[in-house]
Length: 429
Ligand code: ACO
Figure 1 (cartoon, rainbow, N blue to C red):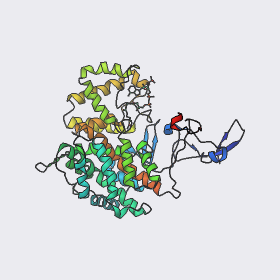
Figure 2 (cartoon, rainbow, N blue to C red):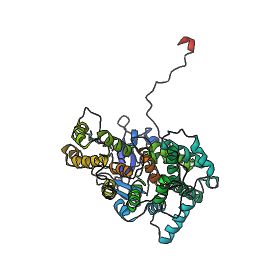
Figure 3 (cartoon, helix red, strand yellow):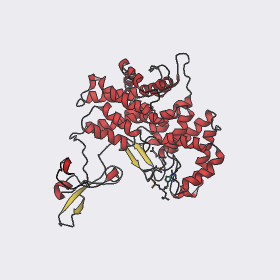
Figure 4 (cartoon, protein in one colour):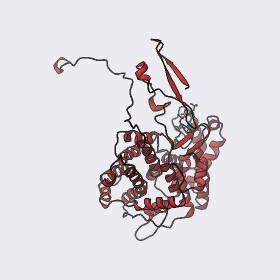
């Protein structure tokens, strides 16, 4: 067994920590016995160097720009698969046979509607709520409706809850939008695909059916595939931590949605469009590029750079092509906002500042542009991210719940507060 020796230089006491190897990626030092052996914890705020679990679902190599779902490269899935097939793959580990896919699609279709009681929740939200706050509330409320599958120790119940979530997310999302714009609730349809169904719930009205285009469906489908999972990011880790207490999956996912809402996580695609609106005119781009490069100016080129992908974001390469295809086909490439986006992309990719720092467009640069071209309102961008990511959350939750020795997650701390002191009565303070 390969080990790393950890020695406490103060006492000379040491211990051997086993080195564990994964299939891909860096090895890990298993330091679970550290406290027992040396009486110390590890200190790693923001988990910069901590593997919180072992997982078989998603692999990322940030330096090489690799993203695999269950071993399959994201490029191949985006090119050949559908969002629902990717859901099956992430949940169950293998690509489905044709029959398995038919059964899965039917199962999802059975769960697309919301309980009518749940629909009444919407009326309680303020007229100008952010749809992400509605998503947190309504997904959390799902656990009070589906008592038939509340036993999280039962694998069949766990599976049913997961299917319900994937099926209902588009309905919940579209409904939030309809409530905010004062349109009637549109019921889901099972005779059309998952993406078409979402678009019709978003945009059709009782007096006007929504005609979707092939390219719009393809662009949204690819966007959902690219956002389906991204290993142990902040929202997924939230779902896992909440799930480790054996909470119901809908409550865990509501926590994940709340985490995704933060601008450091799911909000960047919205920030891209706000930035393009602020630039306002193609002639202002050089001035803004100088601001992005100025160390004394906090303004950053939104949609460029990534914490993990330091070479390029493999999702960005895929989504860039479909984004350009969409703009050309919708004949929107010449609209001011998209002209600014394309010119920014061109200049930044040729600029030394961005090249030297390996700052490439990330997936959010293009997903923001795609959603905007599809007339999805800005406040719904992160909601769409959540719809795509819902399968990742439940797949990771199911994987954790299938572990033999599930233990509640409980990080420790380095206490730096006041040392022990005695209480002083108020009249003596
Ligand atoms: N515009 C201008 N300069 C940038 C940008 C940017 N978007 N991103 C990084 N830099 C510069 C930094 O100023 C720094 O320069 P220096 O070395 O001269 O000091 C250098 O590039 C390295 O930047 P870091 O901040 O160390 O990179 P980090 O990994 O911490 O940040 C992040 C990554 C947060 C994504 C950053 O690139 C950023 O803020 N990008 C814009 C926001 C964005 O698009 N976020 C979405 C990420 S993708 C996703 O979440 C799905």
